Amino acid sequence: MSENTTTIERIHADHTVAKRLGNWTDAGVVEIRARRATVVVDLRSPHLPAEVEVRIENAKALVKLLVPEDTEVEHWDLRWSGKGSLKDAQVARDDVQTAPSRRIRVVGTAQDGEIRVHRGGVAMLSAMFSREYLEDLRSARKEGRLPIVDDPTRDSRKS
Image (tube, rainbow, N blue to C red; front, side, top):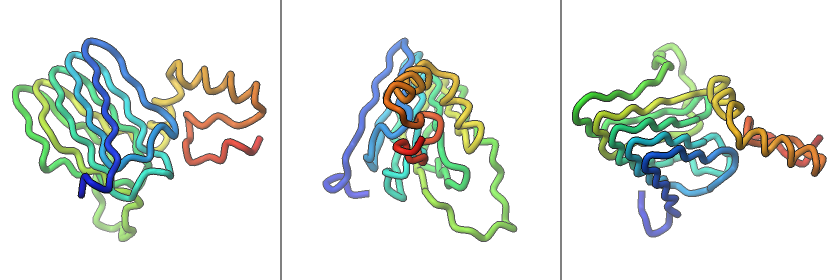
């Protein structure tokens, strides 16, 4: 990815919880620096490009990526030290010939950290069990629109 044409979003979490849910960005590169923290990043927005690069510096932290069901998550260039893992419950199936709608490339380093990929309904539930979702519900009710934190692809103007 060429950095001169792509916007970069940066998230820094140190001993805290950071969540970016809903339609929070249209950047092609997301940089996450987490140390003994929890970071939840929603990558389900239709405003994101087809290829997104997630750069991670993870030190004993949990990074949770919420992605659409048919997204390819490639983590070949992710370097591990100590314990740690990338947990993605979706198993690649050879009998499905459809091309993925989005490709997410995870790069960087993880030291005793964990990266979880939540897809589809699990991603929706992860977003719904948050304060941000409650705030979105309250403001959506006041404004007469639909919430978008649980499903960023939904047109919020319809009610």
